[in-house]
Length: 187
Length: 187
Image (cartoon, rainbow over all chains, first blue to last red; front, side, top):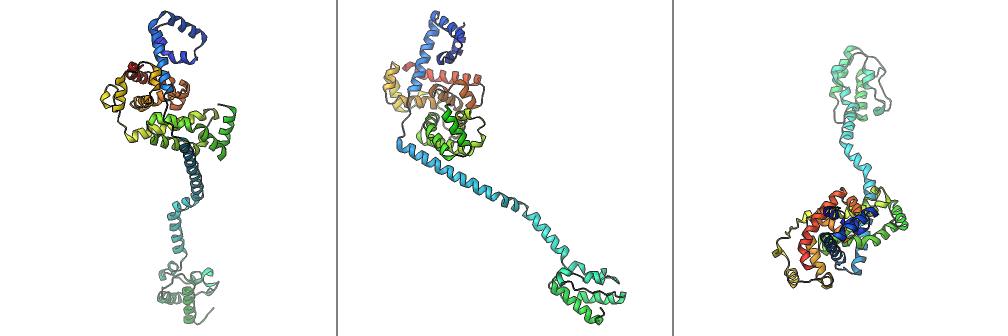
Protein backbone atom coordinates (compact mmCIF):
# COMPACT_ATOMS: atom_id res chain seq x y z
CA UNK A 1 0.00 0.00 0.00
CA UNK A 2 1.32 3.43 -0.93
CA UNK A 3 1.97 6.12 1.69
CA UNK A 4 -0.50 8.40 -0.10
CA UNK A 5 -3.26 5.85 0.39
CA UNK A 6 -2.48 5.65 4.10
CA UNK A 7 -3.00 9.39 4.35
CA UNK A 8 -6.35 9.06 2.58
CA UNK A 9 -7.63 6.35 4.93
CA UNK A 10 -6.18 7.84 8.11
CA UNK A 11 -9.56 8.86 9.57
CA UNK A 12 -11.23 5.58 8.78
CA UNK A 13 -8.27 3.74 10.26
CA UNK A 14 -8.40 5.72 13.50
CA UNK A 15 -12.18 5.49 13.81
CA UNK A 16 -12.07 1.73 13.21
CA UNK A 17 -14.37 1.97 10.19
CA UNK A 18 -12.04 0.14 7.81
CA UNK A 19 -12.73 -3.46 6.76
CA UNK A 20 -10.40 -5.86 8.58
CA UNK A 21 -8.51 -6.70 5.38
CA UNK A 22 -7.63 -3.03 4.71
CA UNK A 23 -6.82 -2.51 8.36
CA UNK A 24 -4.36 -5.39 8.34
CA UNK A 25 -2.80 -4.01 5.19
CA UNK A 26 -2.30 -0.60 6.82
CA UNK A 27 -0.92 -2.20 10.01
CA UNK A 28 1.57 -4.07 7.89
CA UNK A 29 2.59 -0.90 6.05
CA UNK A 30 2.96 1.09 9.26
CA UNK A 31 5.26 -1.55 10.68
CA UNK A 32 7.68 -1.01 7.84
CA UNK A 33 7.25 2.73 7.15
CA UNK A 34 8.52 5.09 9.89
CA UNK A 35 7.27 8.16 7.99
CA UNK A 36 3.67 6.97 7.93
CA UNK A 37 3.95 5.86 11.55
CA UNK A 38 5.12 9.36 12.51
CA UNK A 39 2.29 10.86 10.49
CA UNK A 40 -0.25 8.71 12.32
CA UNK A 41 1.20 9.63 15.71
CA UNK A 42 1.13 13.30 14.80
CA UNK A 43 -2.48 13.03 13.62
CA UNK A 44 -3.54 11.31 16.85
CA UNK A 45 -1.97 14.12 18.88
CA UNK A 46 -3.58 16.71 16.66
CA UNK A 47 -7.04 15.20 17.15
CA UNK A 48 -6.47 14.83 20.88
CA UNK A 49 -5.60 18.50 21.20
CA UNK A 50 -8.63 19.56 19.18
CA UNK A 51 -11.07 17.26 20.93
CA UNK A 52 -9.89 17.99 24.43
CA UNK A 53 -9.81 21.72 24.03
CA UNK A 54 -12.65 23.14 26.02
CA UNK A 55 -14.91 25.99 25.21
CA UNK A 56 -15.75 28.38 28.07
CA UNK A 57 -18.69 27.06 30.08
CA UNK A 58 -21.36 29.79 30.02
CA UNK A 59 -22.80 28.46 33.32
CA UNK A 60 -26.08 26.94 34.49
CA UNK A 61 -27.85 30.31 34.53
CA UNK A 62 -27.14 30.69 30.84
CA UNK A 63 -28.54 27.25 29.96
CA UNK A 64 -31.75 28.04 31.83
CA UNK A 65 -32.01 31.46 30.20
CA UNK A 66 -31.40 29.87 26.79
CA UNK A 67 -34.23 27.37 27.27
CA UNK A 68 -36.54 30.10 28.53
CA UNK A 69 -35.77 32.34 25.58
CA UNK A 70 -36.17 29.55 23.01
CA UNK A 71 -39.47 28.35 24.50
CA UNK A 72 -40.76 31.91 24.68
CA UNK A 73 -39.82 32.56 21.06
CA UNK A 74 -41.41 29.35 19.82
CA UNK A 75 -44.63 30.14 21.68
CA UNK A 76 -44.62 33.55 19.98
CA UNK A 77 -43.90 31.79 16.71
CA UNK A 78 -46.84 29.42 17.21
CA UNK A 79 -49.13 32.32 18.04
CA UNK A 80 -47.91 34.21 14.97
CA UNK A 81 -48.67 31.15 12.83
CA UNK A 82 -52.17 30.90 14.26
CA UNK A 83 -52.77 34.58 13.57
CA UNK A 84 -51.35 34.18 10.07
CA UNK A 85 -53.66 31.22 9.42
CA UNK A 86 -56.61 33.20 10.80
CA UNK A 87 -55.79 36.16 8.60
CA UNK A 88 -55.30 34.19 5.42
CA UNK A 89 -58.96 34.34 4.17
CA UNK A 90 -59.07 38.08 4.85
CA UNK A 91 -55.83 38.60 3.01
CA UNK A 92 -57.37 36.83 0.02
CA UNK A 93 -60.52 38.96 0.19
CA UNK A 94 -58.47 42.15 0.28
CA UNK A 95 -56.58 40.92 -2.73
CA UNK A 96 -59.81 40.63 -4.73
CA UNK A 97 -61.45 43.72 -3.24
CA UNK A 98 -60.76 46.04 -6.21
CA UNK A 99 -62.35 43.55 -8.58
CA UNK A 100 -65.35 43.04 -6.27
CA UNK A 101 -65.75 46.81 -5.89
CA UNK A 102 -65.64 47.24 -9.67
CA UNK A 103 -68.37 44.61 -10.13
CA UNK A 104 -70.54 46.24 -7.45
CA UNK A 105 -70.16 49.66 -9.07
CA UNK A 106 -71.03 48.25 -12.49
CA UNK A 107 -74.07 46.47 -11.07
CA UNK A 108 -75.17 49.70 -9.37
CA UNK A 109 -75.09 51.60 -12.64
CA UNK A 110 -76.67 48.73 -14.54
CA UNK A 111 -79.56 48.54 -12.10
CA UNK A 112 -79.95 52.24 -11.42
CA UNK A 113 -82.91 54.06 -12.96
CA UNK A 114 -81.06 56.74 -14.82
CA UNK A 115 -79.85 54.79 -17.84
CA UNK A 116 -83.31 53.28 -18.26
CA UNK A 117 -84.97 56.58 -19.04
CA UNK A 118 -83.29 58.14 -21.99
CA UNK A 119 -86.02 59.98 -23.89
CA UNK A 120 -84.57 59.00 -27.23
CA UNK A 121 -85.38 55.37 -26.50
CA UNK A 122 -89.05 55.94 -25.67
CA UNK A 123 -91.39 54.46 -28.23
CA UNK A 124 -95.13 53.86 -28.32
CA UNK A 125 -96.12 50.84 -26.23
CA UNK A 126 -92.90 50.67 -24.30
CA UNK A 127 -93.80 52.78 -21.25
CA UNK A 128 -94.94 49.75 -19.24
CA UNK A 129 -91.50 48.24 -19.41
CA UNK A 130 -89.60 51.42 -18.81
CA UNK A 131 -91.57 52.60 -15.80
CA UNK A 132 -91.96 49.22 -14.20
CA UNK A 133 -89.55 48.56 -11.42
CA UNK A 134 -91.01 46.27 -8.75
CA UNK A 135 -87.93 46.44 -6.64
CA UNK A 136 -87.93 50.19 -6.39
CA UNK A 137 -91.62 51.08 -6.43
CA UNK A 138 -93.18 47.98 -4.90
CA UNK A 139 -94.71 46.53 -8.00
CA UNK A 140 -96.46 49.70 -9.10
CA UNK A 141 -96.43 50.04 -12.83
CA UNK A 142 -98.24 51.65 -15.71
CA UNK A 143 -100.28 49.12 -17.58
CA UNK A 144 -101.54 51.17 -20.51
CA UNK A 145 -100.24 51.63 -23.97
CA UNK A 146 -99.68 55.12 -25.21
CA UNK A 147 -99.55 56.75 -28.56
CA UNK A 148 -96.40 58.10 -30.05
CA UNK A 149 -97.37 61.69 -29.12
CA UNK A 150 -98.03 60.77 -25.55
CA UNK A 151 -94.69 59.00 -25.31
CA UNK A 152 -93.07 62.16 -26.55
CA UNK A 153 -94.75 64.13 -23.78
CA UNK A 154 -93.66 61.54 -21.24
CA UNK A 155 -90.12 61.79 -22.43
CA UNK A 156 -90.18 65.52 -21.77
CA UNK A 157 -91.62 64.91 -18.34
CA UNK A 158 -89.03 62.31 -17.50
CA UNK A 159 -86.28 64.69 -18.37
CA UNK A 160 -87.93 67.41 -16.28
CA UNK A 161 -87.94 65.23 -13.14
CA UNK A 162 -85.13 66.30 -10.81
CA UNK A 163 -82.33 63.77 -10.94
CA UNK A 164 -81.31 64.18 -7.39
CA UNK A 165 -81.75 60.50 -6.73
CA UNK A 166 -81.95 58.66 -10.01
CA UNK A 167 -82.98 55.07 -9.67
CA UNK A 168 -84.44 55.52 -6.22
CA UNK A 169 -87.98 54.50 -5.34
CA UNK A 170 -88.93 58.13 -4.72
CA UNK A 171 -87.57 59.18 -8.08
CA UNK A 172 -89.46 56.55 -10.01
CA UNK A 173 -92.65 57.01 -8.01
CA UNK A 174 -92.59 60.78 -8.49
CA UNK A 175 -92.07 60.28 -12.19
CA UNK A 176 -94.99 57.85 -12.47
CA UNK A 177 -97.26 60.14 -10.42
CA UNK A 178 -96.48 63.00 -12.80
CA UNK A 179 -97.19 60.80 -15.81
CA UNK A 180 -100.52 59.78 -14.32
CA UNK A 181 -101.43 63.35 -13.52
CA UNK A 182 -100.54 64.56 -16.97
CA UNK A 183 -102.30 61.74 -18.81
CA UNK A 184 -105.39 61.92 -16.59
CA UNK A 185 -104.99 58.56 -14.86
CA UNK A 186 -105.80 56.45 -17.86
CA UNK A 187 -104.86 53.08 -16.35
CA UNK B 1 -29.93 7.54 17.94
CA UNK B 2 -31.64 5.82 20.87
CA UNK B 3 -35.19 4.53 20.66
CA UNK B 4 -36.18 7.04 23.32
CA UNK B 5 -34.84 9.93 21.25
CA UNK B 6 -36.63 8.61 18.16
CA UNK B 7 -39.92 8.61 20.07
CA UNK B 8 -39.22 12.15 21.26
CA UNK B 9 -38.53 13.33 17.71
CA UNK B 10 -41.71 11.67 16.45
CA UNK B 11 -43.76 13.35 19.19
CA UNK B 12 -42.07 16.67 18.42
CA UNK B 13 -42.93 16.41 14.71
CA UNK B 14 -46.52 15.75 15.71
CA UNK B 15 -46.53 19.01 17.69
CA UNK B 16 -45.80 17.84 21.24
CA UNK B 17 -44.22 20.86 22.97
CA UNK B 18 -42.96 18.81 25.92
CA UNK B 19 -41.03 16.57 23.52
CA UNK B 20 -39.58 19.69 21.90
CA UNK B 21 -38.51 21.03 25.30
CA UNK B 22 -36.76 17.76 26.08
CA UNK B 23 -34.94 17.78 22.74
CA UNK B 24 -33.75 21.34 23.39
CA UNK B 25 -32.42 20.23 26.78
CA UNK B 26 -30.62 17.26 25.24
CA UNK B 27 -29.03 19.01 22.27
CA UNK B 28 -28.42 22.55 23.57
CA UNK B 29 -24.85 21.97 24.74
CA UNK B 30 -23.86 20.14 21.57
CA UNK B 31 -25.24 22.92 19.37
CA UNK B 32 -23.76 25.66 21.52
CA UNK B 33 -20.37 23.95 21.49
CA UNK B 34 -20.39 23.66 17.70
CA UNK B 35 -21.64 27.23 17.38
CA UNK B 36 -18.88 28.48 19.65
CA UNK B 37 -16.25 26.64 17.59
CA UNK B 38 -17.61 28.23 14.45
CA UNK B 39 -18.22 31.75 15.75
CA UNK B 40 -15.43 32.07 18.29
CA UNK B 41 -17.40 34.04 20.90
CA UNK B 42 -20.31 33.57 23.30
CA UNK B 43 -22.59 36.24 21.92
CA UNK B 44 -22.64 34.83 18.38
CA UNK B 45 -22.74 31.24 19.66
CA UNK B 46 -25.82 32.15 21.70
CA UNK B 47 -27.50 33.69 18.67
CA UNK B 48 -26.74 30.62 16.51
CA UNK B 49 -27.99 28.24 19.23
CA UNK B 50 -31.24 30.10 19.83
CA UNK B 51 -31.94 30.59 16.16
CA UNK B 52 -31.24 26.92 15.46
CA UNK B 53 -33.82 25.69 17.95
CA UNK B 54 -36.42 28.25 16.88
CA UNK B 55 -35.94 27.28 13.21
CA UNK B 56 -36.07 23.58 14.00
CA UNK B 57 -39.40 24.19 15.69
CA UNK B 58 -40.73 26.13 12.71
CA UNK B 59 -39.47 23.59 10.17
CA UNK B 60 -40.39 20.43 12.09
CA UNK B 61 -42.71 19.31 9.30
CA UNK B 62 -39.67 19.15 7.00
CA UNK B 63 -37.99 16.42 9.06
CA UNK B 64 -38.44 13.51 6.67
CA UNK B 65 -36.62 10.79 8.54
CA UNK B 66 -36.45 10.67 12.33
CA UNK B 67 -32.96 9.17 12.27
CA UNK B 68 -31.68 12.27 10.49
CA UNK B 69 -32.90 14.63 13.21
CA UNK B 70 -29.38 15.35 14.45
CA UNK B 71 -28.14 16.07 10.93
CA UNK B 72 -31.19 18.28 10.40
CA UNK B 73 -30.34 20.20 13.56
CA UNK B 74 -26.67 20.50 12.67
CA UNK B 75 -27.46 21.64 9.15
CA UNK B 76 -29.66 24.46 10.41
CA UNK B 77 -26.95 25.49 12.87
CA UNK B 78 -24.13 25.42 10.31
CA UNK B 79 -26.15 27.24 7.65
CA UNK B 80 -27.09 29.96 10.08
CA UNK B 81 -23.50 30.22 11.32
CA UNK B 82 -22.17 30.54 7.76
CA UNK B 83 -24.72 33.28 7.05
CA UNK B 84 -23.82 35.08 10.25
CA UNK B 85 -20.10 34.82 9.51
CA UNK B 86 -20.67 36.27 6.08
CA UNK B 87 -22.91 39.02 7.41
CA UNK B 88 -20.34 40.02 9.92
CA UNK B 89 -17.70 39.83 7.21
CA UNK B 90 -15.26 38.53 9.72
CA UNK B 91 -11.75 39.25 8.69
CA UNK B 92 -9.84 36.23 7.53
CA UNK B 93 -6.39 36.29 9.11
CA UNK B 94 -3.78 34.42 7.19
CA UNK B 95 -1.99 31.59 8.99
CA UNK B 96 1.25 32.90 7.67
CA UNK B 97 0.73 36.28 9.32
CA UNK B 98 1.25 35.72 13.02
CA UNK B 99 1.55 39.43 13.68
CA UNK B 100 -2.25 39.52 13.48
CA UNK B 101 -2.60 37.32 16.58
CA UNK B 102 -3.47 38.57 20.03
CA UNK B 103 -0.42 39.40 22.18
CA UNK B 104 -1.42 36.70 24.68
CA UNK B 105 -1.42 34.09 21.94
CA UNK B 106 1.92 35.24 20.60
CA UNK B 107 3.34 35.00 24.13
CA UNK B 108 1.92 31.51 24.43
CA UNK B 109 3.59 30.47 21.23
CA UNK B 110 6.88 32.02 22.30
CA UNK B 111 6.93 29.90 25.47
CA UNK B 112 7.58 26.78 23.47
CA UNK B 113 5.26 24.17 24.96
CA UNK B 114 6.54 20.77 23.95
CA UNK B 115 3.91 18.14 24.82
CA UNK B 116 0.19 17.85 24.23
CA UNK B 117 -0.34 17.26 27.95
CA UNK B 118 1.43 20.44 28.93
CA UNK B 119 -0.31 22.22 26.13
CA UNK B 120 -3.67 21.12 27.47
CA UNK B 121 -2.79 22.20 30.97
CA UNK B 122 -2.58 25.76 29.90
CA UNK B 123 -5.76 27.72 30.43
CA UNK B 124 -5.32 29.55 27.16
CA UNK B 125 -5.00 26.45 25.03
CA UNK B 126 -8.66 26.41 24.14
CA UNK B 127 -8.48 30.03 23.18
CA UNK B 128 -5.47 29.36 21.00
CA UNK B 129 -7.23 26.52 19.21
CA UNK B 130 -10.39 28.56 18.85
CA UNK B 131 -8.37 31.36 17.33
CA UNK B 132 -6.63 28.95 15.00
CA UNK B 133 -9.92 27.46 13.84
CA UNK B 134 -11.45 30.90 13.62
CA UNK B 135 -8.93 31.85 10.98
CA UNK B 136 -10.13 29.17 8.58
CA UNK B 137 -12.63 29.99 5.83
CA UNK B 138 -16.24 29.13 6.88
CA UNK B 139 -16.61 25.76 5.10
CA UNK B 140 -13.26 24.43 6.31
CA UNK B 141 -13.91 25.76 9.78
CA UNK B 142 -17.25 23.99 10.01
CA UNK B 143 -15.90 20.78 8.53
CA UNK B 144 -13.07 20.58 11.03
CA UNK B 145 -15.30 21.66 13.92
CA UNK B 146 -17.84 18.96 13.11
CA UNK B 147 -15.46 16.11 12.34
CA UNK B 148 -12.24 16.63 14.23
CA UNK B 149 -13.50 18.54 17.24
CA UNK B 150 -17.06 17.39 17.82
CA UNK B 151 -16.36 13.90 16.53
CA UNK B 152 -19.10 13.47 13.93
CA UNK B 153 -18.46 10.84 11.28
CA UNK B 154 -17.52 11.68 7.71
CA UNK B 155 -20.99 10.56 6.56
CA UNK B 156 -22.74 12.71 9.17
CA UNK B 157 -20.72 15.75 8.16
CA UNK B 158 -21.48 15.13 4.48
CA UNK B 159 -25.23 14.87 5.20
CA UNK B 160 -25.11 17.94 7.42
CA UNK B 161 -23.29 20.06 4.87
CA UNK B 162 -25.18 18.58 1.93
CA UNK B 163 -22.05 17.67 0.00
CA UNK B 164 -20.25 14.47 -1.05
CA UNK B 165 -17.91 12.75 1.40
CA UNK B 166 -15.07 13.44 -1.02
CA UNK B 167 -15.63 17.19 -0.52
CA UNK B 168 -15.58 16.70 3.25
CA UNK B 169 -12.28 14.79 2.97
CA UNK B 170 -10.82 17.49 0.77
CA UNK B 171 -11.91 20.33 3.08
CA UNK B 172 -10.58 18.41 6.07
CA UNK B 173 -7.24 17.87 4.41
CA UNK B 174 -6.80 21.55 3.58
CA UNK B 175 -8.01 22.74 6.99
CA UNK B 176 -5.78 20.29 8.86
CA UNK B 177 -2.74 21.29 6.86
CA UNK B 178 -3.28 24.91 7.83
CA UNK B 179 -3.95 24.12 11.47
CA UNK B 180 -1.05 21.68 11.77
CA UNK B 181 1.31 24.14 10.23
CA UNK B 182 0.54 26.51 13.05
CA UNK B 183 0.15 24.05 15.91
CA UNK B 184 2.74 21.40 15.01
CA UNK B 185 5.68 23.28 16.44
CA UNK B 186 3.88 23.38 19.79
CA UNK B 187 3.20 19.63 20.00
